[in-house]
Length: 227
Image 1 (cartoon, rainbow, N blue to C red):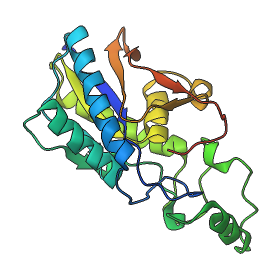
Image 2 (cartoon, rainbow, N blue to C red; image 1 turned 45 degrees about the horizontal axis):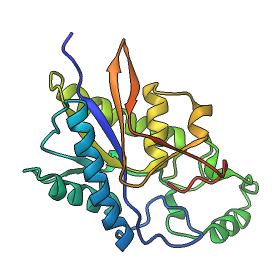
Image 3 (spheres, one colour; image 1 turned 60 degrees about the vertical axis):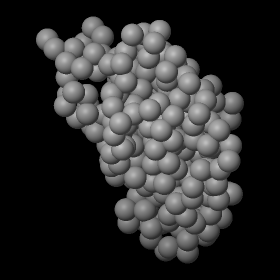
Image 4 (cartoon, helix red, strand yellow; image 1 turned 180 degrees about the horizontal axis):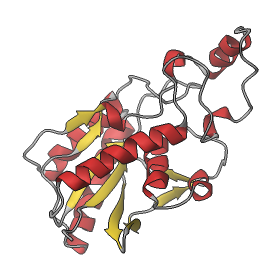
């Protein structure tokens, strides 16, 4: 069987996130810290590429949300890649649909005012199966399945490339994408997050995707799930 490329999953860098609001589909750009993280991330990617003898694919794939797109463009420049990133809606964060960019208090109030709906559960943001009862929303599981499908498509499209494909997305969607790919189970995912702009490498080995390099971030607040 022709070998599959290694996937480098990268959470976008720090950005100007609106406070007390689900990260989800917020449209804001990277912060000054975020641009610094991009440079640090490029250094980490280069080091892993050299240590593991994995050449970097000339094109980075990313989410269409601005923070991920800017992270991908920054990495492209820092790594000296010749091709602009390719952005896809399939790599965006979990959608909260019609509640996009409302703060948590307003989301709760909107659901309270809807006579069709019960009150939101306390930890609705971190419940993998919960989908806000508004048009266009999806659960973390659904977002992960969407991301995983796109990652599989990219890997199969470059089957035979013995290198690294960089995929820039969002912490929660990438993490639950890893669950869908079989890297780890749901309970493990609940205790993890991702470092900004730092690569986590997964590779197809012995009939499954496995984590081979890069560090997942250990979650200190189990129910806090902010992208």
